[in-house]
Length: 356
Image (cartoon, rainbow, N blue to C red):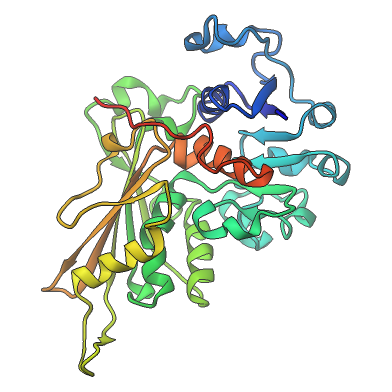
């Protein structure tokens, strides 16, 4: 039996990507294309790639009415939106997958500090499951509310998680350098995202203040059972899609089978990647000597990871790449939906990366 789906924020970049992916999903029917900005306009007039594919008209963002009509709601909305309107009545009727940060961070004070807004429904934070499927898949049974992870956080966590979990790196030394395409900033018109501002330009932003920092720290903290503090610096690069993470950390010495203690080798660390990800369809561990590239994951739900050990400094360089609109947003949300409803996890997501 097909399930009915509603999308709030269907005309943003993440919402548009949700539509594209769900139209190719054999188990769902989209019945509500919600958009506060384009009410009563044809969806295909907003996204003309949907001409003769989607005949629907954009509806409003009446979450109460939508909850009565569908089985699951995706909210691809700004921070604070869902938290301001979510009620027990709504959650008792429908499952919600939220692409904003409203329910990702368990500590309310941390959320309010980094996002600069008051959380309006903290009573739902505890039950929300952080929807990083490769790590929290076993927590999805009977869940009503999924907090879909951020784009930078998904790439940063999946790239570093195995080594934090195994205690092979000193997490106090962890530095995450990330690059993102401009679609990560959303579809709204902003001067800093104009063509002349972005083209042939590259810049760091949110230095020491980016809001994904506490999200990465919290999830890595769960991995090692300690408080984690990282240095995280994102950069904007002149491309449409993609995130590339390069993370640096000092290695810890380990005991070898013959009893001597030394730093782990590159092959040993690659084996750890394989231990964690060989059974994960969407995480591809590249061969030794290869480095991830955004172009090789574009348009897909894949994350490519690899690493390099610097024997001079006894540091490891961990690298990951994903498409910020797919695995970094809409694709992961669909993956979460598949888990919630018992569908094949890859359903609607077996997409070959686009090239060129």
